[in-house]
Length: 225
Image (spheres, rainbow, N blue to C red):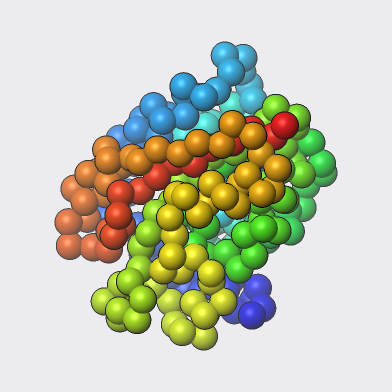
């Protein structure tokens, strides 16, 4: 499957993506910061890469903590909306269009790599996590927030057509245990994960009639040895 097919899919979805959450952005950013702070070193600014930034939530989360943030997405429409969101909050974030599985950055470029709602959309997770490790400095940390969204062959939970989802290994098999195995295989140490019930409650409250995780979302983290 070509990147052009995936790019077009997310460009087409971008106008209404997470629309019901926009009014609650301040609350989401504070919640995300509470999850990350316990893992971060005290010094600032850290160099942070947000992969698959979408509307830029994680990019803004780290920028508002005083870090130097770079954000990447395959969809130029998503990037445009993330830029507008950052500008509205007075934040300086560098945005790039690019492929999460072929990162356009040099080795050892970032202290932190973060992604949210990205893992299920990828075609090659081994390659992705190796790319994350490559661009992190030794001792750098990866964060991933994701969850299990879709039931096999259930049209009420489908996000994309069969010609796309047949290439997505985690489309309906996304578990924190599986991600932990992938992160460890990529060479990360101190790999751990935890469920995020507060985030599940937040999502349900923002969009009670919308799509929700089928299981509680999780936060996965590890360190580049």
